[in-house]
Length: 100
Image (tube, rainbow, N blue to C red):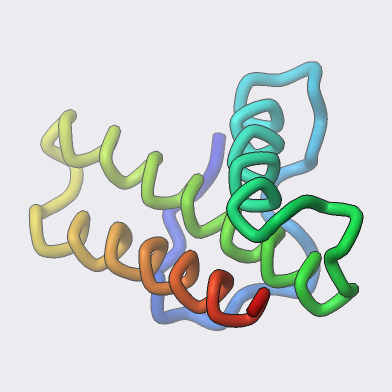
């Protein structure tokens, strides 16, 4: 399962989750990437830097999803949940700006 990483921590160069259709977390990560590529106009026109930004943003979205599940199980405070969600939203906003 995806470990919670503080949203202010620097992203690792190696992905946290394998993009694998055979497991649920990998499929969710791929779904986030597809949604983000659709948001910026498609994967075909994406530069390598934009592809990296999409991958990083998808991982943040997945971490926010995991944080929400932890919050619902009373394992995470509301302020921590908001930090994860804000980091994911900010990354998505930055991705939109990058694609323009």
